[in-house]
Length: 343
Ligand code: NAD
Image 1: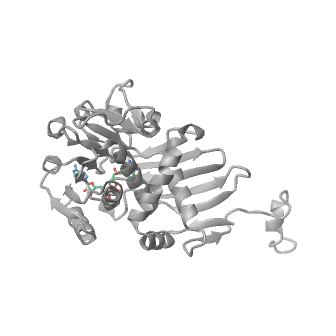
Image 2: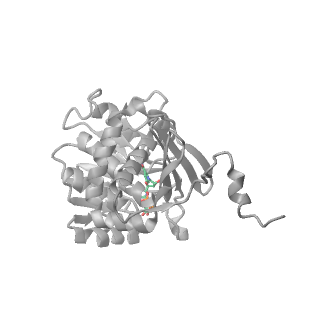
Image 3: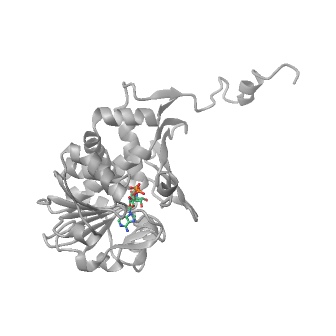
């Protein structure tokens, strides 16, 4: 049987445990998997592009467990009543290839993306950071805010979105949770005096959410919205202001902000910083940029985390996903047993 977490159970589990606690736990799993980077199969994700958006498969394996996520990215979806990003994911046992765990991953992706951003910022942002600018207050944004409070103690937020309803929704959701929120009137106004900038917008375009002239020394930029060919958020000159950190270079060169740069533009893979094999932040004035696109190992960590966390709880069910005849060579016997005699 395969363990299955549906949306109903995912939401109940997240509410019962608290997103901040989950994100803190997930960061531990992420760090442990990033530290054993070379033990994973790695490849850029497999993408199918259409004029509407993209559908992607994100596989990896540590040769004990195989995992993949199915995820879409459709920036025009909210205007049609659908979400920009939805997902589900699977873990399987490499010894027999059977899927052991299946879960919704729309909510889980928001938690894992936030946990990844916070893991990286904990290493790269100035330790005295206290104010975060957030540009784009859609589905991912509240999770990002909670992750930065959980990992870095950030409670002061300056926010901006071109959609007033998205700003209103963010204020409504987050003010009761104790955040001190200032609504700005432009992206440039948001970043003034901020220690960390999170860009989290969705537009299938080479957008220029931020230009180099508004970036102050010492800031950490957590750029998560540019994650597809032809879909970026930062002016290319911003990337020249400091040091760029990525998840998996071959994928980020295709999908990240650095798709705008020459193929030999220098970047550092974050796992090397985590392991002390490459420098991260080296001065208080340095600008650090996390060019996040989302990588399969992060989904693997998130899947492992929830698989372990729901053991012994009411938040999963067992489903009959794999046809498993008693005689492994008699698959037809399953069907034949139910066929009317003589037909
Ligand atoms: P969403 O559609 O719910 O929210 C995006 C918000 O950006 C909307 O409120 C929109 O009004 C706003 N926006 C668009 N253009 C803007 C602009 N020029 N200035 C200010 N605001 C603007 O999308 P979401 O689910 O929150 O995802 C946000 C982005 O993050 C998407 O591009 C998605 O593909 C990406 N994403 C990345 C990762 C990762 O791992 N890096 C993971 C999940 C999602």
